[in-house]
Image (cartoon, rainbow, N blue to C red; front, side, top):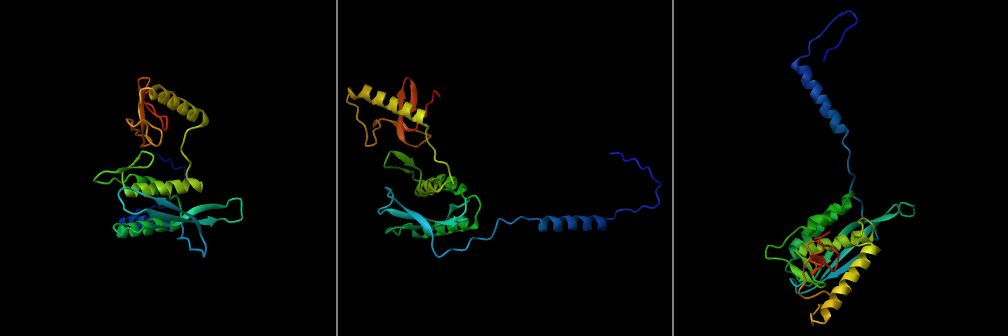
Length: 232
């Protein structure tokens, strides 16, 4: 880059290595002072509101009770909303006690720090049990106990408005119900059995909703639960 000098040069100075070092140090100091903190952890109020969820899995003898307490932010204003503050898991089964306590403490620390905590859902749901997962009531496959805890957190975040509830719109739901009724009526005469959820017992696992509800319909693998189809 060429710079044209219109005025007479009266003096000049060379930049030494020491000057370069001082300039670099000044930039570091400036960058440090401009760091934006996410915020201090929230203090615990005397009273919190929350929900308790019960999960019973085939991998634990006793049910687990998951309590998620929320703190009310901007109470009494149009911006009032709830966000998770702490989580507790209780059970008669002491087999998983240590890692459950560790998990809940880490999750509670993340909640109290503030910011976007919805990432915890995907992190928990992506944990797979080396020996294989299990099917819970409803025919849905769960890869691990940790993943089911993640589903509970997801459900809670949806209830307080931090996550959008997934699902089909009215038109899509009506279409799925019609396809399901059509299939069951067509195969009822052949004596094909259905499970407690109303899906054929020979249905395959849907990769989208993890439910055994996918059947071959009109030459396409179609899920009778979420409507997912290989043919679009």
